[in-house]
Image (cartoon, rainbow, N blue to C red):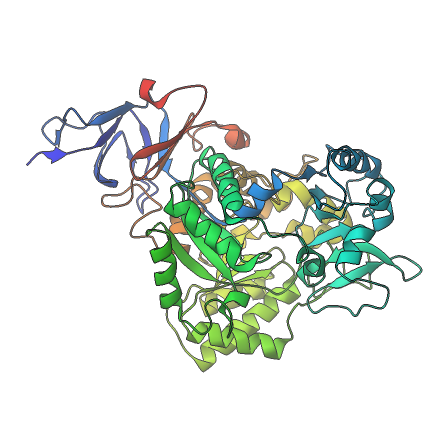
Length: 557
């Protein structure tokens, strides 16, 4: 019997990334699912039925791969930051450069209105320090200002913002963070970790759902241009609670965001008297599916147990290389942490916990072990986010407990040189993101961008895992490099496995979603240093072209 097809892709270099790493030449799609895969460049006429409605795309030798799956980023935050002051380096070489940008916005903004910025990096500024409230007051005395650090875990605010938040010299340190002070002990406007940041951020007017939906749509277009088809927002509700969740659900339900979305819901929304109270994971997922027209799913419950290594707030077992007295801090008391993890575990949640420093990673594993001992549960796929400094013992425990890793591999390029010289020292820096050790232990892992902390680009993350090149051109930890096909799988089929969705996505196989990225070149065939520069020609979700590059129309391929 002939197979009716809505879409037929021909003359393709198909990298299926299935268990056999099969290659193919053509693919057929019906009702959004893959219904045919052939080694030939065109499917045999005796096996498919063309109709007037059948779309045929001739890739002319281009590469077709499964759509990329980014398992950890902050797409809503990215959408919001696109409309804020860019304080990043090398765009800004000094604090005076940031002041200049801020001054321009101040002149265009009515007094007393908030001004937001993002991306400053104290270690890249000429002064080698954080901007302070005094620096901001000089150019913005009458506007509250909030500038987020590149790590996302710190911020600096001016006196007007501190006044609105009732922060004075007598304020107590918050739970899960602290306020920066100068050498004389006076507050300097720097806020460390969400515990301190939220004291100010909570005073910023909450954007409307309509505005957030629009920002999500703009961000999604950038994600689609990178070949991403399934995406996880890794901290829904972190700053604006239920409003963030509503924006996500509205954006996917209305098609403003065409990505297949998975939502990591902040644990605060899962506590008693919160939005989801004592609901089970299954009940929360049903609610998300209902409110998103079946386009979004619950990923899991999200917690943080430390901060950022480049912000010196990641919790380490040994001190920071640049300060022998500094170890970083755990966010939660271990006993209360264990109790909350056990509660979420019993309610059926997959749990995802941020852990950069090895002391935080140990604490997270202790909590997972406590939960599993008290309430055994198969195939939980709990995970640790970033896993920057995991030791061999940590990886062994992760394997024993069935805990997966989502590596923030882009750190190797963007901060690798400074990890070596400033934060961790040469020995620990060589082992950040120990992917080869994870592969050796057959640990389930993925790679991620953590956008907007680094730019969204799966091909860049794959390049970083394969090459481990730093900005200064050094190879950081050559023993931890991985091969190209494994790196590709870490952002496709391994991502599907981490999402409990391997039966429906992550590889090009019969019956799976017709989610594809079209690449101008084959990443397994070119010089590995060129992988990050391969153009994404098109992105297809459910058999529909949702992105095509400006350079070519998919219809003319």
